[in-house]
Length: 362
Image 1 (cartoon, helix red, strand yellow):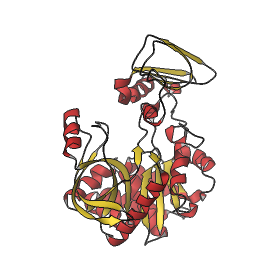
Image 2 (cartoon, helix red, strand yellow):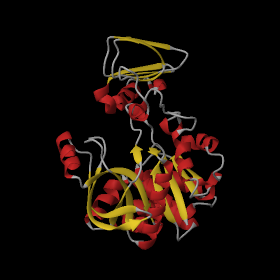
Image 3 (cartoon, helix red, strand yellow):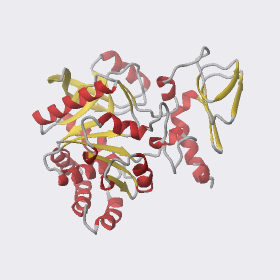
């Protein structure tokens, strides 16, 4: 049966100051009335019931996750004692789900993506489930055809076709490429055989655990030890004692890059539009602009203001004059003003605030 594993442990520091340590971006609403986390669960709800939906988040966020997702069983919300990146997270989820349902198929996805239309995502998920059944020894990922030469995403190099299910094409993967420099990204897009790496995966628990065991046996040993304690009185103590010893490593570096070189990965051509909602400029991609090219979610009074992203509490007024290409974000007790070309550097402000004794603002 199909299970969904949602990774919701990130800090969302590039969305500071709205995203804070006590309430990171996956728990926030950026459009509509559902948070990013709730929207992720909504997307899979037609195919995966609550009892087969799992969320891995930070220990400090378990209560908020339960409040936002009351339909999920409490045991399906797993709180990491500390973040160890996605390889231990994915491995632990696979080990626990595999223990509960040895013949499961798992769809792994982050909690902070924007995907439209939802019915096309569901069609792709159905196709991926069929590919996992037909190719149980493969690791399956969703590739997004690039619309511009992004330097903020990893890339997947497609090889020979692997088949079609539900009208969705799959290809064998030749290479997982890390975030490239601008000129390399331009070459990737021009070549036509590279997809953006969406970070969404579908696989059998035994398959991903087998690959993790072969490539990172220490991580595999840790997550299996913890999973063996799941559902017992020793669970929390085992989790807290051993999880922190797992190597901090992404699943791409730990498994996917080498597995792709060995022909063990398939990539589906995602038939939907996708955004990883990674920074403030994501608002620009998901919302209309005014006549001057500004994306405004604030009580804003502007003169000669162009090409800015402006966000603020409706009870406060943001006035601008003669500025362009800025990120201007007011939230609570903090204000961000930054050149939009440095959107990916906002997290450095968070780091500096912590390092200079002003952690209360993070």
